Image (spheres, rainbow over the protein chains, first blue to last red):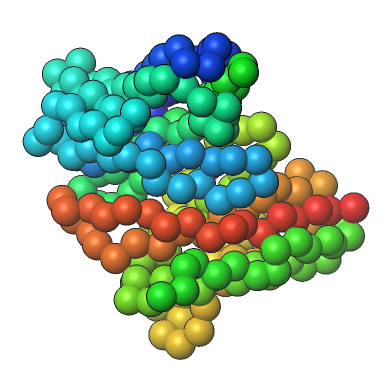
Length: 111
Length: 116
């Protein structure tokens, strides 16, 4: 099955700086890569996603890049704010509609 | 359009008892997934179901755990003879697509099981 690895497990940045979280996957059949944000005690919520036919996608301060050859994708958050503090999960989905999640990155934005 | 509804939100059981967790997917969604999240850990896949069918249960422990998604009513995750290690948050998610055109997962608020 698919194996998704995520790094780093914890990340602290100063408010206004950028944050980058990286994930790798093992199954070349994976074709959909969402990112979820989970605030403490809350449900995970989709913040951005990318499909395998696209290399980059941006939504305001959040962007995701995908390198299919290297089988890795990254989340970039610019101009970080304290409310960006949360746990972020990457995931990879393969054709039979299974979703595999990374182990999460706990992001802390220091005011 | 109500989101994914899970109940109970919190459940306390003593060792050896049974736990039943329920999940109603979003309206129009026919795919349900269950994930387990241990404190400060990631989301671990347990089972993927469609109406009346288990599609993938490769993440389910072989014993004591079962899941169903009947034609009518919510999906149920059942844990028999609970042990302290079963204490976790159990998240349900639903989706409305399959195949190459996979769709977004919508998560419920989770059910937090505590085994005393």
